[in-house]
Figure (cartoon, helix red, strand yellow):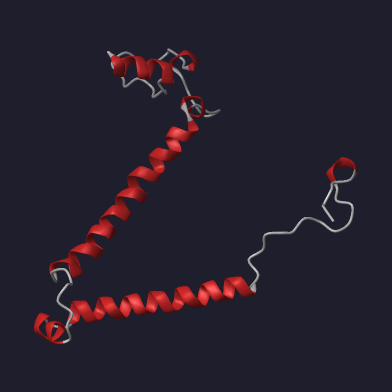
Length: 139
């Protein structure tokens, strides 16, 4: 039976299947597989990083990358993650927000400021409207 909303969007009985984080048999199988896979990858990484090359060659494993990558690889991935979290992710938020959302009710512009400041003093702070700022940067 299909779920159909009743009056005013209310359900008429049995609702739609909810997306819950509860354990299901398929999630248990995937979770167990990922647990075993991640532990075996960690074991292979530690064996490759710790054992000397002659021991690995005696075992018939001579196709591994240089030991340099045992340290350089995780460092490289850490730096990429840091750059993404600190730079790329916030910039994607700004791009998605657009120029109209930069201004809010707390924005103070030069028009709304009192001009009774004393000569020689520092002028009051104000926000530059996005349109003027983008025109200044294009010139």
